[in-house]
Length: 258
Image 1 (spheres, rainbow, N blue to C red):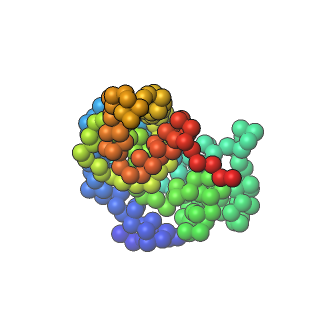
Image 2: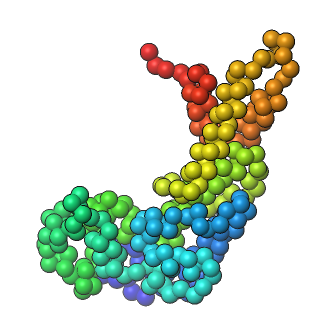
Image 3: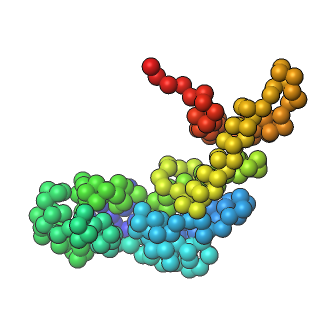
């Protein structure tokens, strides 16, 4: 298929990918893996903040739920045309007063004529890479037009998996499968609350352990201290560093610059 006018090679590749049935099936398979891992960690897809997911990707909640369920989804549902994605940003990225940006305001911000914005919205014109990038930056939605739908969804869902894995690790459960690594954005509010509770439990254990007599003081080894040490050793290094910072603050061992 010929590359659409004004599209970069990467953008055209994303479009061609999602125009094929295989592309949609690949995305559905990736979401099935995420669903399976969440269930393995004791959660359902309801821990996902679907409103936030739609806001970040422009893909409707109903479409994402159909993908998770393995239902049939058309390529246009997963990867809407540029004009629909631009309209989505106009409708959702509002000014501080709650009103939509005018076409003229958008045009002035990205350095094009008002008629260009009109043509982009009615589908009679495709944007170049620079205009796409500038529009995304204006609406504070980096990568909104340049990331493919699969990358956008997996990137937005990665923090949910990270939170679920960390909760499992803090609870002493072993996470055997680690997949679909990506960049971090905003996670799940529900999982955040569970994560805070798990960290709070570890902090309380650390506080009690710091106040308990040690073997050198003539006391027996505290089982809670042993449990805390075992939990910390089981965490990946990057998670262990984060939790150790919290623990140091909790027990008054934080290092402060003079």
